Structure formats: C-alpha cells, structure tokens
Image 1 (spheres, rainbow, N blue to C red):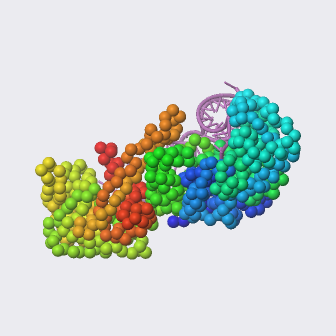
Image 2 (cartoon, chains in turn green, brown):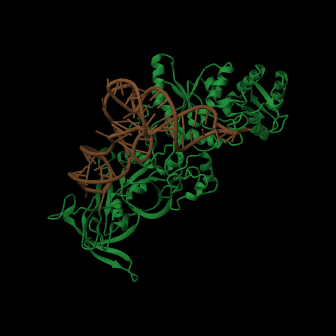
Image 3 (cartoon, helix red, strand yellow):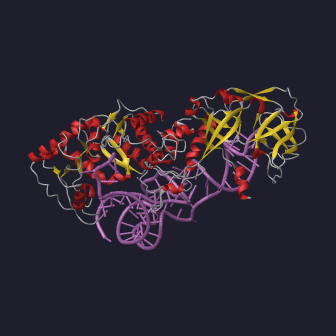
Length: 559
RNA sequence: UGGGGUAUAGCCAAGUGGUAAGGCAGCGGUUUCUGGUACCGCCAUUCCCAGGUUCGAAUCCUGGUACCCCAGCCA
C-alpha cells in the first residue's frame, strides 16, 4: 500500500502551488507545533499529515516544534511520546527538534523592542480587572490606568518580572494595540505572565513566560516557516499574528492559514477530555487501545499507513462542524490489513466437536497459505486431530432458512480441511450443549463433495494443538455519535460500558510465534494485533482492531 | 444587538460561468473453501433559501436563514 499524502489536493496545497507558480514562494517550510501537555491523537494526525505532506510535496521541510510556553502543564514524558508518535507515523522532521523555549531570549529582546516603540506596557491590573477592562463582545474595552507608563519604567518592571521580583499574577506585559477593537484579541493582549515554575527545557532560568500569541508567529519567523497551518479557532488571532510580524524586526514573514479540525463519530478529540479519561482510570493509560491517540490506535492494531490513508480520505477544508463517519477509519484499516495481514484461525467462543470417524491417534497436518492472495507470505501448518474447537456461533440447533453453518444433520466445510456432518448434539443435565459429534467426509479435501453443495465454511482449531489466547474485544468508547455535543450532559455519561470484553479463546499453532504488534486476520472474525505490552510480559494477548464486515449479522438484524 | 467564519447526497469531499468528480455508508448482482476480499451496477434534474444578471449559475450580484468560533495571565 502506498501513501497518497502527496496526491490529495486541498485548498492549501492549491494555494501554495499557485504561489510557487507565481514565484512568490520559493522553498516551502511548514511546522507541526504540539504543546507537550498530552499525547497526540487522530486530530493531530490530520495536522501532521498535512504539514509533513505539504513539505514533502513541494520539496521543503517540516519542523517539529514544541510549543512549550506553559511549564505548568507540560512534561518531558509528553515530549518523548510525541516524538515517538510522529516517527512511528512515518515522518521525519527537518533538522533538530525545536522548542519555542529555544527562542525565549530573542522573544524577550523583542518584548523590550515593543516597549521602546511604545507598543507594550506592564500592567498591574489583576486578572479579574483585566477581564473587566476588556469589555464584552458587544462593548468596547477601557484602557488600563497603567497603559501610559514610560518606556524606562516598563523596561525596569519587565526586567524585575523576569528575575522573579514579583508574585505570579501581580503583573503582566501587554501589547498596546486597541482596547476598542471589535476583535477581542487586539484589546491589548497579554505577552508575558509571571510563572514561578520550573520549565522542562529551561529549568529555573525564567520567571516569566510568553503567551502563545507572542511566541508562535515569531517562532515561525525565526525558523523561516513559510506557511503556518493551524485550526480555525485561531483565525481571530491572525491579525495579532500579523501585528507582531509587522512591528518586530523579524527575519521572515510566515503566513497563517487555517483549516477545520477533525471531528470523529463516537470519539472525543480534546486533550483535556482524553487526559481526564486517563487520570480517572477510565481507560488504561494514554495508549489504551480504545483511545483515539496515535499510540492507542497503534496498540489497537492500526497501521501508520492506514492512519495516513484515513487523513487523505477525509481531506482538508474550512468547512465547520463536520463529523467524519468512523466507518471511514474502519475502512482505512481494513483495506490495509486485507492486503497485508497474514491469516490465522482463532476460536473465540469455543464449542467442542468430536470427529467420530477420526481415530484417536490421527495426526494430519495441512499446509495452508499464509495469505490467500500473497504467495510471498508463505505457508503455515495446520494440524487436525479427533477433537476440534469451533465457534459456538457457527452452530444452531434450529437454524433459520439462510443459515449456512452447522446444524443437526447438516454439513459444513472446515476451512482449509474437510467437510463434516453434524450427527449428534450432546447436552448436559440442564440442557446446555456440551459438544457436537460429527463425521468427516474424507473425500472432500481440496474438492467439493459428490452430488451436493456445501456452502458454509467455518473456522476451527485442533483441540490437541490449540494455543490458549486472551482476546480483547474493543468497541467504541462512547455509545453515541457525538459524546461531547451536548453542553448540559457530561461526556462521561455517554461511555460505552461494553467498550472492552475479554475472552479466552483457542488459536491455531502459528499464533504461538506471534511477536509484539504482529497483526493477523482471524479468518471470518476480524483483524487482531498482538498486544505489545502483554507479549513483552510473555502473555499471549490479541487486541481486536476491527471486525470483518458481517453481512450475516445484517441479514439477522433484518429478520 | 460586536467581530471572524462555514453551508454541495446519510457522512467526508471535488468543483472557481459551459450543464454536479471521488471515497465512505447503503442497496442489488457476479465470483469465492473467509456470509471476508475482488468485480459489476444503482445511489444529487440539483448545490442552505429567495430574488436577480447571463444563451448558460453550485460558481457572479442582492437580500435572507442556519450553524461554528472569540470576552484565559490555555494552546
């Protein structure tokens, strides 16, 4: 499977191509700027594919820059995880990893520059007072009483803020723009706030930290970023982004372009909410296979290719409020694994079948393809003995009309082996089915039986050779399409209680050799991935990535 | 009742004055030792609504409507 990250056109790619053709842009430089305050999720994957994809398409580079301006929320552990996720997705950033904190000295010098230009001032108002002075959406704000301090005083105050002379919240540095602007972001935005916190990169060097607005565009400029792609909610910030670039002696003029963020059915993509799920122990960490994080999806069995394909499928636009059908994600992974996952048989709801005309010492081994359409995947060995396991769902005592599987007196093909007939149903005292007695038609290996058609094919595992496995059946974490649409209902109310069910099954012998993160199609069931944590501990655990399409279930539903 | 945005099928999405791509989902069929896959076919007389311009409009103009974002010393 190839990645089409180069081929899906969108309004940003079109625009850049026009700029290049017009000669207004030479080399394209983009950046992916996560804040290290959580793990990357599928929404970030969209941004990563866009930013790295554009750089690749136009022969430029994409920087990885941590937007680390808020030490209170950030951690080194997140930085490590984010780097690993970007690499796993298959992208390589240009040069070293960057940090906004690399530019703190320059940013500080530029803050002093603004002060000297009478374009910034130190404000003593409290946070609440600043809010009051700011006005509302429909009323203009009022200037702070501290707005007209001298440059000398401002410079002195800022320096003393920097060295820790003041308490947190006591003062801020603000840009002097327009308190009456209809765009609230221009009503003297905060440039620096005091934080007596140790920073994961700069340690205790700084007692003040720049705001996002003061750091982002200038960081772009320093790095020579040409196109700064971000989500729609930053659109109102663009005038401010441009204001800094116009009022500071920056070395380049990046441009901000906004696109709509991803919303996915049945999931939440908000770092805050994902962190809540982790912190409250609702899921088993950031990489729980139910999480829409890159690492969770990886553990679930999604491939990097499938995630990139998904991002290509959904496109990039400015249309808001869109909600992508999670079936698209399922399609992306199924189509990858259909081609690339070796096949295996695994019984999840074991029902014992005794093959009455197979001798006790029968020991036959079939050599079957690792993949029905890929010879390069070789063959695997499939032993057959007198007792086998089949899936309980593949037997019905009183089958409906279109049931092609096993039933009393009926025949079915054991996948890759013989046709068997169910002769007897053995029940226990309370009437539960204990085992089936079946007979093998030995004249059906690799050919259809004489004079009749056997339509059904079921999967099975030789009981004597079965490998016990734990199978984790994952389903959507939420049971409603839009868990966080409702403002009055907590999204946790919509949790799906059955998002995980654990089952003990029997796998064919080839599964004993599985390595962490190996992916298989369990034939007729779905795609599964060897859990990397469990396997590292020597436990055989397979995570269900996604089920196979099930038209039988659909038929049953219709009645 | 401020400012900034967005509206094309159930969902995502092309389209930029020449007569509505593609994908997902769905529905029918063929093939099949996976009720999977693959393959074939169907699925918008119409582009939020109403007017207007034009030989011709999803595209241009006018006026509406709906929805999203912004009042963090978060990003």
